[in-house]
Length: 185
Image 1 (cartoon, rainbow, N blue to C red):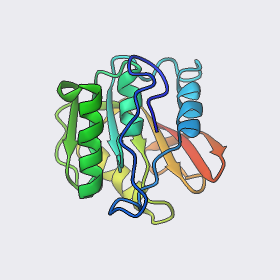
Image 2 (image 1 turned 120 degrees about the horizontal axis):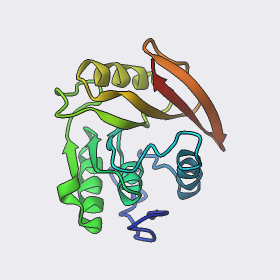
Image 3 (image 1 turned 90 degrees about the vertical axis):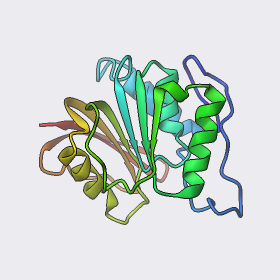
């Protein structure tokens, strides 16, 4: 697992070890992450990354948020309540030496504190098939984490519907992963 593009291109991230306490984590593969960022920066969405604040819900290793940071995001807030994930995220932030541009919230994604500022890009990568994504998205809206022009990137095992307050832009399939793009209504 590595950063695919931008300022930190090629830096290897701390992986999830087989058989360790974090073996349940399912990081977005390099290939899927590369395809996703090609779509994000391909012109369809303008430039949803440069200078924006990013919210990475169910952050896992932090790979999605760190990729955005490498490509010009101003700040990333990582949210994960798992101790192994928190350690991996801290390690990966330190590898990039970007502590000043990152915040790690050790909380459940559906119990967010009030946002210090809204985010223009939201990565949502909940455990597959458990219905946690919509709850987290609603919590982010309630706590003012999502700006009015935000792009939501939702990774799941199937295409997702647009919850109230969001429009479905498109869905894309990458192997057994579906990415659903949403916009705020």
